[in-house]
Image 1 (cartoon, rainbow, N blue to C red):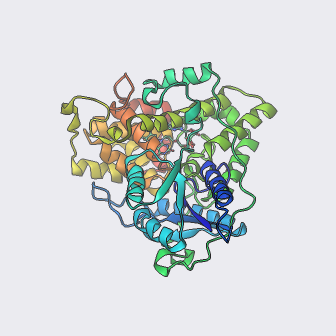
Image 2: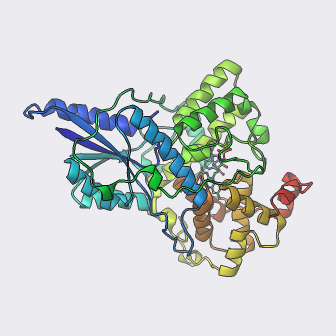
Image 3: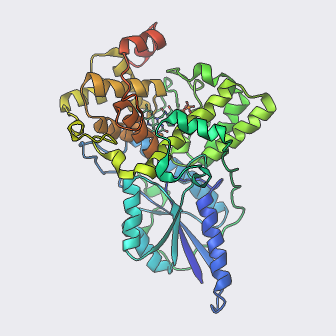
Length: 447
Ligand SMILES: Cc1cc2nc3c(=O)[nH]c(=O)nc-3n(C[C@H](O)[C@H](O)[C@H](O)COP(=O)(O)OP(=O)(O)OC[C@H]3O[C@@H](n4cnc5c(N)ncnc54)[C@H](O)[C@@H]3O)c2cc1C
């Protein structure tokens, strides 16, 4: 009897599940090879290990806001429904993966754990801990748009400037692999009884329904704006049906509203939507309705997302040092003034655009790309604050928190990544003139 544990991480979906397909193929092979076994069945145990919702960051605040927690739980509920329909329910485990998975593997006699690869320090440490506990863990890279195997350079030699990266990709005509269909059937669960301390049901989870806020650009709970794969695919359909890619380039620097940008990020972040699927649908849209600079620009932005992923494959933990990729240690000492930092987080700096944006971020868990740049620059350059504390606050608040994109963008603005121009400082006065001349945004989010 072969049992595999499939550990869901930031890939909470069944469509385009390269890692799950790998797990299923391996199971079939194992069963075929294991002819001596009297019982040639094979089982799959899909598991999600809940993060510690009470964990605080080294900066002293909770690592996950209630909105972000709600977003995760709704994605899990959707995944759980889909898996149940395939007869192989999701096990929600209340303890962290490094304690839970060895115990589960022992209980169900699993030989292997398969999961997606996440090239960030904490996530890599989880894999090391499992391997140190004697488990056989297979990780599968799947979260980028492009396959890392198709890149024309060794993963240690990523072009150091995004434009070069994009030009090579485009020049060589490298395109993403087509997305995989969702499996139509799954093996059954193992027959062993799972101990109660290793599972939770949804009624035991700390749900806190968000109060809808009509001002929000990502109105959680309204229409398809809810967590999980089904809502993600519906949102993608509606975005394309409304032909919004055609106007994306003109509107993408907007500050408010559902339509100025794609709003794919919250689903991409926990994997409810696969970037390859979004791209394939975008290409189909272009075939039907024509391509223009707007539809091209969505690909351009998805390449940024990839760039920060591949940067992690090359540099790993170096991206998390105070000096980032800069070599001089004198730059390591970013100051941290708690009072100024608290004022920034709470939207109480006295700078109206910054305060409005920080209110929006805290209230809704979403902020436009333009304002993410402006508030990050303000913390680093005007408040002389610590970029890593800012990144941690974004982690807490953003429902689309993605370890690669968050770290990559903060490094970029702080001038501690690969960008040769050395940081991005935005003039708040200019940003107000260019993007909120009549003060509408600032008034809307004044509290
Ligand atoms: C300081 C800072 C922190 C950020 N933290 C995150 C984060 O934690 N998670 C996250 O998903 N994005 C992050 N971003 C990138 C960007 O702001 C969001 O991806 C975007 O605003 C999400 O809205 P959207 O889906 O409507 O994007 P659109 O403008 O419609 O773009 C389409 C997709 O392209 C990708 N994309 C767009 N811009 C970027 C970018 N600058 N970097 C990487 N990918 C991009 C996203 O996947 C996005 O969903 C951050 C940006 C900054 C400046």
